[in-house]
Amino acid sequence: MQDLLEFNQAELAQWIHSELGEKPFRARQIFQWVWQKLARDFAVMSNVSLSTRARLAQKAALAWPDIVTIQKSKDGTTKFLLAFHDGARVETVLIPSEDHEGRIRWTQCLSSQIGCPMACTFCATGQSGFTRNMTCGEIASQVLIGREYLQDTRPDHPILRNLVFMGMGEPLMNCGELVKALTILNDPHGLAFSPRRVTVSTCGIKEGIAKLGESGQCYLAISLHAPNQRIREQIMPRAAKLPLEELLAALRRYPLKTREHITFEYLLLRDVNDSPEQAHELAKVVRSVRGKLNLIVYNATDGPYQAPSPERVLAFEKALWSHHLTAIVRQSKGQDIDAACGQLKARFEK
Image (cartoon, rainbow, N blue to C red):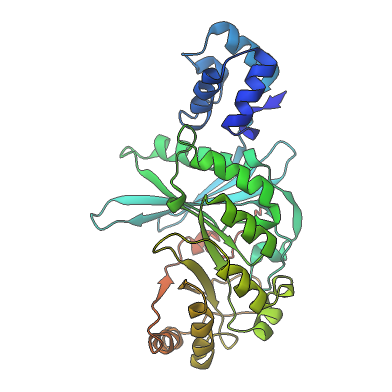
């Protein structure tokens, strides 16, 4: 049986024609049912003929992941543990925020791999090991789960506004399936997200950065976390195999639209990378490309690190301000359910 979640619209049109003898418009209808109307069964596709639905049921499937657990934080953040057909498990997180008019908007944090091969020393996912890459359909179906949950549980019909690939895995180590999933996320007949609403975060995979830039389907964020190569080698040894200067050179080649920036993410670790002197180094790195900076205060995991004090965070910010560089301190959410940045492990106790 062919899982139709694994097709973008062009591939679905080819399959529909070769297997069912149907014209391209039929593929568009089915694609909309799958990704926009959240259909789990071919029987509900009312504008598709009964005979075509019967043949679809014989030849194809819609393999949504199973929800193993749902955890809800006191701040409204909601974490899902999902299971795929082979038993592999992954986590995805819905994060609420309030806009300037007081309306709740949601961001979904997506995973791209089962585990992570990068083994960054501050990240629970990286320390838990790597199992396999996720498929295109597995990646995109996380959004189906998020949208269905919001529709079923929120009477105000809230908007799932932004997608961030900041969950489990290094997205650009799975670049082929990621880019294919992005075509579904961006397709106006699919999940219909603007590329401006999708951010892919990478610790720095040079070939993947180039491919992502060619696709033009998202914003780029870099998990930097160190102001120099020495500290990057200490806390991100596998990512640091790409020297910092080579990473920055790749970023300078990355195609940016007018007023678009590359976001640098910087995790503050007490007495490791949080001194004012290191902030001065960091400012030079960020300003060497068209960059902006998000600061993240460390969220506790089983690792050896601690979060800096608020006073130390402020001193770090002030050092950045002296370079006329604005840094946003990202508010961590979902810490009480291990859903904050760096905490995802897909653990489940039976």
